[in-house]
Image (cartoon, rainbow, N blue to C red):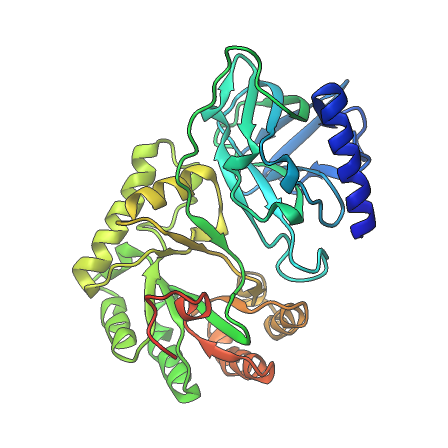
Length: 397
């Protein structure tokens, strides 16, 4: 894996010296890019990718879908190219995000999380006359473990046609680029050695107290992500539940105000309102301020991360995803709810240590003690998300 990576690095360095450009993708073939590595779109109804003669037309109706073009099938060390630029030629909509993805330390897609994380920019900020130039320095990742680029979170149903993706050594004469916008970090994995954490999103009031009792009986601390509007809903008991959770030493963090796919909202003003109102709700109802946020549906995009970072006093925002998915959304009300246990077993075996869960379904709450048992069986200590991320502001273990 690494010998291939070094060979490709030599090719990249040589190409940049000789021609000032390394072509990553010119869309000449459906099965591989110009480097001979995989490229392709997510499968599903939310995106339509049409291969043209030396081009790819993308139309998306869902911000969860992406197109990927890889530098390497494992890890590619591009640290020596940090002064270079990503250059994209395109036509159509520029209302989408571009991410540079970072692989896990094993450089293995069979290990969770894969990818480990990525940093992201908003394409429209860099687009001029059908061309985009993004400094690689604007992608704040471990560039020794680069996977490739993702074109994602398409905010418009208008088409985007890509015709060239390459790395170049310099900008054209007279061309400038904007400053990097502050962007919250995206987290899939605990960093503290031998730690594992439950991130639990809102559920239904009828199952809240049962969930709290199971957690208390297990003697563990967790992180709850709450929708702000639920705290103002007098028909539920969420404010009381989360006050109790705080009193017991749990963490309570943000899950938006109304649970939309934030990146798909029609304007930056609406995105800002989701953050500002949910921040105000936690402060008003629970007396809590936090820099932790879990995006509804796990949807990621540059505007979501930039606007949350701007909303957090002092910055340093954390967008929390997961590496253990109990798949309650898939199996919770099915005829085979025990497959939730199978999902946890699978993801723990792959190295996952950060849960996503909800208390939406009776079957999920029924299996919660088993999820906790499986987590404890790893030998890792169960703790809050801020503790597992070694946050200096988190309470001591």
